[in-house]
Amino acid sequence: MRLSSRSYPHPVVGNRDDVPGAAFQVVLGMTTDKEAVYIDADINCSSRTINDLVRAKDAVFALHIECSNTVFRRVVEFADPKHRVQISADNLNDAVEVNAFAVAARDLFSYRVDGAHADYGNAQFRVEKGGILALGEGRVFDLDPEFDSLRPIGSIMAIHEAQEDGDLPMRVNFSEPKIQVMLSKADFSEYRRLKPIEGVSMALTTTIVLPVLIEGLRIAKDNEVEYEGLRWVRVLRQRVEDMGLKLDQDALLLAQRILELPIRRALAAAMRYAEGGEN
Image 1 (cartoon, one colour):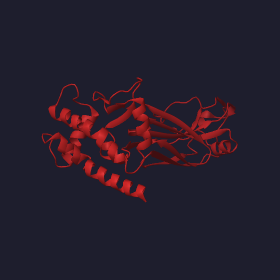
Image 2 (cartoon, one colour):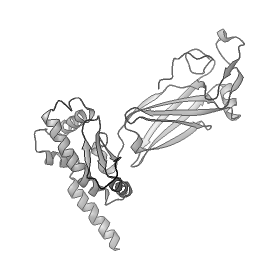
Image 3 (cartoon, rainbow, N blue to C red):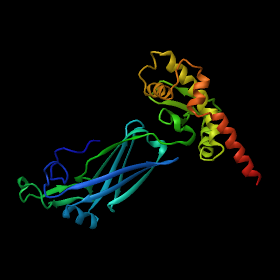
């Protein structure tokens, strides 16, 4: 969603020379942890008109957050110029576009903004609720969240709940830009519950991710036409190259190197968990 340099039916602060006497500046930042992505916005609006409207609750600041890779889209409204948004890490991946702006919180029937371009004269405008009053320069973040056990390949694999009912085995679809792993509804529920527990997450890596990665490495090595050009194939090949390895090596050994010896780490984590449980 690109907001800048558009034509609006009324003057918009920050849009070209609509309002040369004011600015709408936004500092955007993004951080992540194991479970969430945090987007921080610090808005500096020099328009007295906009600030007065926000204080009167006739306008609000807003962030539009969009991730085309996951088809995630959200608009978050707030009144404080400094605001943090928390989003589950499962909802965002790769490029995340963030735009900040101010919008009308109600219908404005005689809107005028101080410092507007002389071409607007003394004209007044009707701005409907949700209409853009000010906008800042957007930013695109390249996101590769740290998913603990999935960290080394978190950007190429996603685990989902199967749509069908029943006791189903794990299935994998390699034909998408990101490898799609489907678990039965019961298995997925347990997976979501256990994943955050230290000492258990590594066992999940060994059980779920390791065999999928082995097959993915085989596909990447064989250059199968069906999968050529997919993002996960490109990323996996680059990962192998960056580690100084070669795709023609044994896939089991490669997968364990990429996952940083998951069996050893799973055993160590399980031992710590067991010893903690005995105390």
